[in-house]
Amino acid sequence: MKTVIIYTTKHGCTDKCAHTLANEMETNATVVNLETERNINITEYETVIIGGSIHAGMLNKKVKSFIDKNLDTLSKKKLGLFLCCMYEGEKALEQFQNAFPEIIRNKAVAHGLFGGEFDFDKMNFLEKAIVKKVANVEQSVSNINYANIKAFAEKILK
Ligand SMILES: Cc1cc2nc3c(=O)[nH]c(=O)nc-3n(C[C@H](O)[C@H](O)[C@H](O)COP(=O)(O)O)c2cc1C
Image (tube, rainbow, N blue to C red; front, side):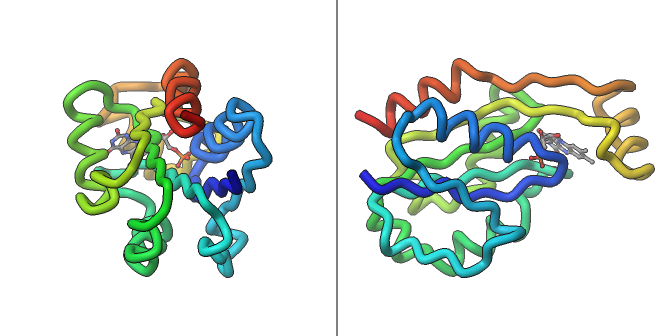
């Protein structure tokens, strides 16, 4: 099963989750950061996993445009979708639904909410101010949900 995990990251959380997922699956998954690799050919993979993160309610632009450009091909693949974000529960689910188009959400064999991190060392002044005001958080925190990553990997491997 040739697998690719395609993602982007702002402060490194989605990158961490993509690599944790690749290790969890114990297959030779190729991990591709869309920021650095633009010419990815998904036709050569049987399984495609797409991950992104939410900033101010929106999925990363590069992930969104990658999905839009490849919608037809993606809907014919074994597919997994995951999201990094700090909201949990209903709000996280709502963000997931807004992030990924219905056609590929319905097709995906695995949906993942992998939690998130606030990394103050990597935030700019404005981001720090937003996080302090909106989330009421003043220092770095990691809420990556490793159990959800494991469960996601199991669904993909089934
Ligand atoms: C400026 C800013 C805005 C954010 N907005 C949201 C948001 O609207 N909803 C949410 O659930 N998480 C939000 N987050 C949390 C991110 O989703 C979280 O930091 C995630 O781990 C980022 O992953 P990345 O570093 O891979 O981009 C925000 C974080 C920052 C710094």
